[in-house]
Image (cartoon, rainbow, N blue to C red):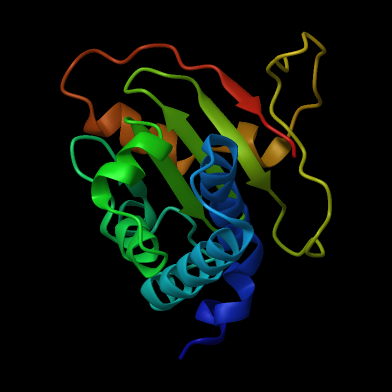
Amino acid sequence: MHTLCARGTMKPEISAAVGFLSRFLRIKGHVNDRQLQTFSQSLQDILAEQYKHHWFPDRPCKGSGYRCIRINHKMDPLVWQAGQRIGLTIQQLYLLLPSELTLWVDPFEVSYRIGEDGSICVLYESQPGVTVGAPATTTGASSPSGSSTSVNPMVDSHISCKEELMVLGRASPSKAYNMMTVSS
């Protein structure tokens, strides 16, 4: 396996995505702590295995569509697989998770959108070469509390994977999307 695709290099991104999805299960209830832990560990293992040959830190947009977790009229098969491991039915997963969710798991950034026309929010962000666990910098949008945030040169310097997909992948005219960061 190529060293850039090593399993450990995607751990913070996968952890951010899994933590985000797991919070929905915890908030809405219906799962105990043991089930939540099993779901989280299972989904981390499933995503790491799925992404191991599709992780390109030198070209983060490459493979972005493959790594996208999508729930719309169909449940994402990887999320469904982790849900099955704790005894959840697909109907229960639909009740616990947003009905329209897109989660992008890319090298150095994890973002999500709830609803087809919702704003894109950044869950995790880092710079290449920055130590794991460093705080995420944010884009120039205002946070939900109304305070202004700092500008991240990585985001401003190029179109991100999700923006590229939204611009190129839309059949209807593109809309203005606001970027905001969610911190845990």
